[in-house]
Structures are given as C-alpha cells and as structure tokens.
Image 1 (cartoon, rainbow, N blue to C red):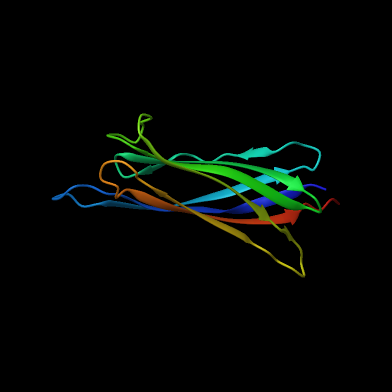
Image 2: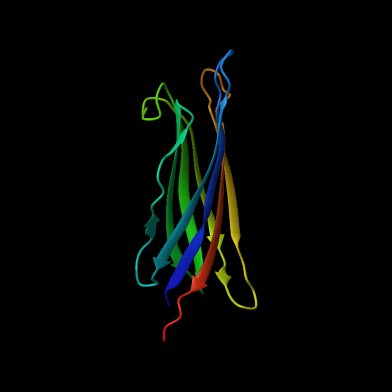
Length: 144
C-alpha cells in the first residue's frame, strides 16, 4: 500500500564572524512531501542546499523506504561546509550520517517522528554551527 511522507525541516544556525562584525544567524524552514510505494526501492527526498551566512552551506540528503507493516525508514547525511563563499567545496567541516523510523500514522494513533542533528565547524574558529530538526508523518494513501 502506498504511503505519503510529509513534514518540515528546520535549519537553525550561525555563521560566526570575527569582531567587529556580527555573527550571521539563519533560521530556515523547508516543507517536504513525497509519495512512497511498497514495490519500489528507496526514494530520494529533494532538499535544497541552505546558505548559512556568507561563508557556510548546509547540505541534507534524505532517502525513505517503506518497511514491514507500513513504517518508513529514513536514512540521511547532514554536512556543514565552511569557506569564503557559500559555494565552497574545499572545507567540509562536519558530516553526520543518521537513520530513524517514521511510524505509520492512523486515525487512532497519530504519530510524528522527530530527529535532530547538530553540525559544527571543526576547523579554525570552531564557532560555525547548525541544528537540523526533521519532523515527518507517514500516512496511508487511500484508494477510492
């Protein structure tokens, strides 16, 4: 039976700058919605890269697959890049691989899965950081 995965990704981060400049704080919301079919392999959930100030970028890669009795297994990777522009590829400062289960949602048991990752600059400065919060629900697609 087909499922619909719906939710919200929240990026809350800071591109720390040196005095006398102020840190660049960023708060972004990105809605997600995708349809999953039990007969298909994992589906990629498209998420745009997020600029974090003028010198950082956050990338989130997510895939989702229906498991067992309708639960959805989500696997992902979060990355923080630091450099002189948001398009830099030379300084990947942090990377977190994660997975979590989104329980099936029913009328009598509405569930929402929540997963949080923290990314931090590990290089010079060490003050750039972001918290990525992922909220997802998993509902059956009714056939008429």
